[in-house]
Structure formats: C-alpha cells, structure tokens
Length: 223
Image (cartoon, rainbow, N blue to C red; front, top):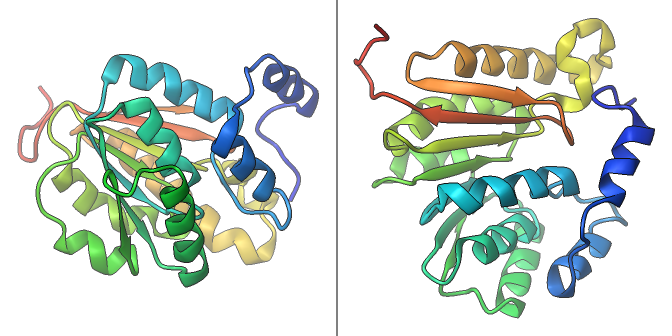
C-alpha cells in the first residue's frame, strides 16, 4: 500500500536527524528488515523517549510483543525498577522475543503472556500506568474497554499504527482486503477521541500514533 501519512522525503530527512541505536536494539532493527517484521518506527520511538522522560512509567502493559524490540526499548527507558507485561499469540514471535529478552538480560523485568489478547486481557488484574497497544489493528476497539479498566486516572494509552498508512481517512484509499481493518480503526479513533474518560491526540508520524490520557474514571461524566 502507498504511504499516505507523511511525504517520504520529509520522513527520510527527519529520520536522518535521529541518533541511531547501538547494540542489541540496532541488531534487532536489522533483523526486522528481511523478512519484514513490524517494530516501532524511529520517529515514534523518539517521541516515546521524550514522553517517557517526563511521564516516568513504572508498570507497562504491551499488546503485541513481536520479536521483543519494543519491550526491550521500553525497559531501557523505564530504568531498573520498570516492569513490563507483554502479550503475544504468535509462537514464532514468542520464541524470538524470549531469546532477545534473554540476550538483553531483562528476563526478570519483562513477562510474556502467551495467547490471544482477547482472552488474556479480561483475566488481568491490577493497574498499569501505561499501555502500549500494537497488536491486531482490527481488534483495537474490542481491547479498549478492558484497557480502560486497567488504566488508573492519570495513566496513558499509546496506540501505534493508528492511521494504517493513511487509509483510515477514506475507504476509497483502502485495498479491498483492508477495508474491514480501516473501518474498525476509524471506529476506534472515534471511541478514544470522544470517550469522556480520555483526552486524546493523534499524531501523523510513523504509521500514526495515538496518545490518550485517562483524565477521569468510569461514571465521572464531563462537566
């Protein structure tokens, strides 16, 4: 699909200004190129670096582990006391993620829950001050009610790939096989931008990222 979120030449320029990663993260970036495995895009990672520097999350829930890149990235940002729980259903990705988390020496701080998020999320208890949603795009709306229960007031929901290469703007832009996902994402964007519990912004960088802060609990209607 054609990229319709940001001009390629501008995107390439902005990426050229970022300080590249080294070590394991750099190794995983190269690994993810061929065959292509989706990981956080560099400009989104930089945004989250800045965001984490002042939000200082202590406990993070991730939906969509893939090869463990983002979990490792978050663990480095969060410091030694940061705790991450991440959900993944693909056995091949789980195997790779476990190997990479072991390499990073983060087994004691990153817990992988194996299975479908639709089944795992309802069973989770406690609170997470940050949730990073990067799983099945067409399922984001189904995940949202439980995620809101797990987020305390003041907590943050970060949604990656929310613009889906720009095709959420119009069904005419979507190849036939992607229309349902585009519709579901449009519905999800409406939900997070109109939910009285959330204050949301959608930023057109990378593949689109949504940042939602929970500003009030269930039942506390907007004045």
